[in-house]
Length: 303
Image (cartoon, rainbow, N blue to C red; front, side, top):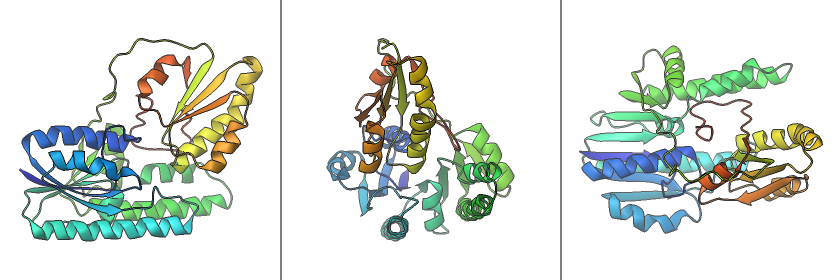
């Protein structure tokens, strides 16, 4: 088949987030049997991966993006929206330029901004059902904040409903997300694409460091920063009171300078930055900590 693949992120070896890892894994399978043309956004510094991708793809169209969206920055939000609009335009160009048997679209946000032509069968992969964590935040909020979280939940629900309505089949990555999608969008055809947890696992020996607690996350993401600060500021002092030489090892790239300076000043916290082989860090830890205050999809770091 000739497949048009549209993605909001670039897949490559060592990509630091679960959605990218899954897409890179799927590409390794699809390109063995099918012709795949990809239209994708990319972040600064990722250009070095273009040559490797072009060797396995039938075509590659790229759209620059400033970086992951910062929810607290209006400029970042507008820049992200602009990059999605450009991605949709480039997808239109690719769909008109060639004839494809199928288009596969990654992530709800991409599906919101791009609608396949009527004669092109389309599938949408919802890495997360984004309305689910929004509803959970609304349920757990009180006071004036409840008004803001209710509005956010309604907006995300409307965005996701529009996205899934455009595609013949929608994939979720877990049975739980499928059940949520069926309740929220009963008119859609929902299927499950089970995430192959542990795709980077090679079976290294365990070498535990006593007292080491591990936190893992793509630290340019606001939710991961929120979870890490909760662990470091609300929990960690109690751990150190009981185990004075305990170490909190934080593995992940993209942490903003302000947050890095704040966390570096907390006794026992060590920041590694981006780690090429996370399995070594997993095998060295006594405890793995993953505070999830709200969330959806598949929390791959736990798998």
